[in-house]
Amino acid sequence: MPDCLFCRILKKEIPSKPAFEDDSVYAFHDINPQAPIHILIITKKHIDGVAELAPADEGLAGRLIVRAKQIAESLELKNYRLVFNSGSEAGQSVFHIHLHLLSGRRLHWPPG
Ligand code: 5GP
Ligand code: ZN
Image (cartoon, protein in one colour):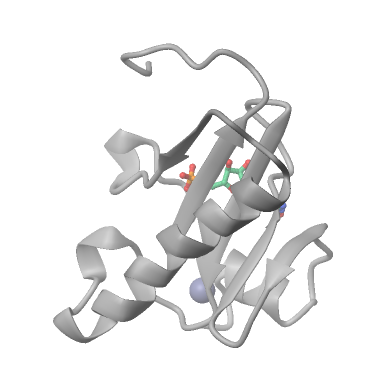
């Protein structure tokens, strides 16, 4: 998707601070962190969001979560939150699927 911000980050047309990479997933630090640790885990394949996941994407979607857990372990995070925003009214602003990993401060519930 040529106009997609995160596809452009994947192509390194836009710089990002990497946190993890494998053959199907890339993780990088959020430009506007909402916690001391705020990492975005994205698929290398463009998918608009959770609502657009196909049954065949099940393994890839699960991989996002497992990679988030492994990144949290590598950073020795004991408490963290994983968030998918799905749809603009739920806070999604970039329509390339991404999992937020937030940590490093007390996280309140419910979120705003
Ligand atoms: P959403 O609001 O769609 O759930 O999350 C999109 C996230 O992408 C936001 O937290 C926002 O700060 C982050 N973001 C937007 N543009 C950029 C960018 O150019 N670089 C990085 N690293 N993060 C970005
Ligand atoms: Zn994209």
